[in-house]
Image (cartoon, rainbow, N blue to C red; front, side, top):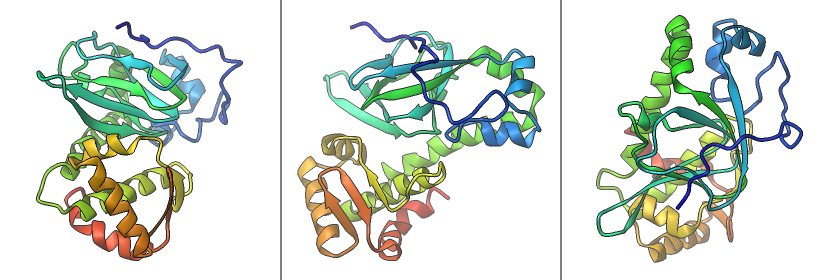
Length: 252
């Protein structure tokens, strides 16, 4: 199968809530760069070229396992799933990447990407040449620290897959994790759509799909969540956060 290879997007197609001097609200690097007193124009002066990528549609791959590692990308819109295929042809979901989050960081250690990345819906990206951002990070300690923070965040989320957590605890932690990640980018933390299929959620949480459906129904019956197909509403944040606490504590 062929990969998308980070296609370029005509600027007229891409809505942007930033401008020549201000970062987009979902920019994954804005906080680090602004802490260094740098705006978009400053980055341009340092030859930091950002390529707009997309739109990618559901099922289109950004990269595949073994593709040469050249860049990382920040999600501006949509959801990206990363996954691997084992020797027996079984898929293992590694994570879901939301607006404001970065994909491709796990390729830093080698010369190729170690996993696949596929769009789950219509996805827009900002592509950063890794050699260029490495040079920039060496000059800006704040940006370098931010890259390390992004890496450690990915490692921390692996706690969701390890440990002897119950199905209810895993699902509660997953929901609260999505809620907090959306809230950090200015989206509603209490009502949102799960763009990933329940089979993908089950795969990620290492649960059976029917278990995911049963847990969601139980959380709904207990008044913690409102569930309408892929629409989710947190009805009792205090109780669901308490249920998720054992898992989320390991990620602190």
